[in-house]
Amino acid sequence: MSKIPLANYIDNAVDWMQDSWGPALDILSEIQDNQVRFLTEFLSNTPWWLIVAIIGLIAWKASSIKLCIGSVLGLFLINNLELWEPFIETLVLVIWSAVISMIIGFPLGILSGKKNGFNSFIMPILDFMQTMPSFVYLIPALLLFGIGKVPAIFATVIFAMPPVIRLTDLGIRQVPTDLIEVGETFGCTTFQMLWKIQLPVAIPTIMTGVNQTMMLALSMVVISAMIGAGGLGAGVLESIAQLKNGQGFEFGIAVVIMAIILDRILQGLGKSLQVDKDR
Image (tube, rainbow, N blue to C red; front, side):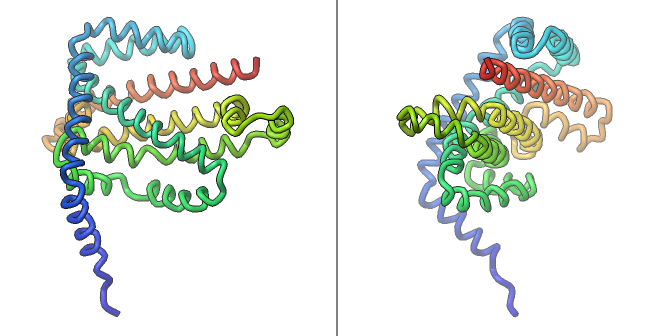
């Protein structure tokens, strides 16, 4: 049996996309690059201590004074190690990619939770997206957008989107049937049912998906340094290439601190929303 020319099919599909969508992709790439560049420059020009204070305040309000103190100390360490600039670059890419993933993922998850047919269609796609090795996403991103931050955002969005879709779908499906019946009894429209009953009940599950998406975005942004994303990932990549163990450890510590802060803040927000719902 002759080999199926799958690689040739993929190459032809990518060439077709470049020929057909090239101008549109260039415009999208320029818009994304300008937005990320503006946000990065804005935060870079903001006094580092002010950003630390804001993040500490957010951590306090979202969780506890213990998280606030831990976040402030961790950010002080990052600044002391002279990693503030790559930290800001990575933070912007992570948040930007996660927000895009959620903007796309929430509607798809809601639709999947309410329509069994769409659920049957999208779940195998999500399985494929989650089992594909993360490095593979860099190939189409590099071919379509070249080297830089935009292909990193594209690859990160594709890699990080599945959890928010899955867990939004799960949260919608886990809403008790009796609550749905009460809403129907009072004559709720489809939108009212979703906004006032299903989403509030599903918030803890949805926030778990948001948390997972944020963590996956961070991991992918670090890997995307291979295609010019910059940030902390570039430092890790340089340390590996030049066998600088100490420098690699410093950049790795900064990534860990960022991951812990984002994870704990999102967990705290999820618990706060759960308490408000119970009240």
